Image (cartoon, rainbow, N blue to C red; front, side):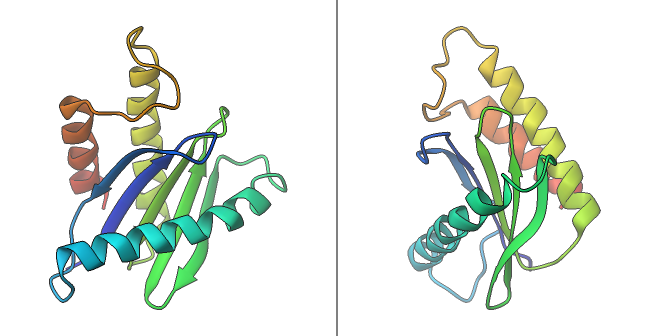
Length: 136
């Protein structure tokens, strides 16, 4: 079973959204969640180095930790989408990021949402998980 951990990190490096999509069965849920957060947080430094050297929003696989890869997508507002995964499939990950970016734009259009604050919408969560099932 594949491992997918998705996080949206705000422009000020604050967590906006996170989802443990398909947790691994060989590690307890709490340990697994903390390990995913640690790997993703460590990859933020790499994202900040790479984002200024390219004009692309999709940065591909930017970091590796043991068997896990970290892919990233940076928006124009410097919000970072981070995906921790254990299988390399660049096209499906790129499509996943583009679909989630569209969902994120729709959240930003909500007049009651404050920029860089956590997304607590159940609808957003369900749609992200549906996109994950479709592309990953």
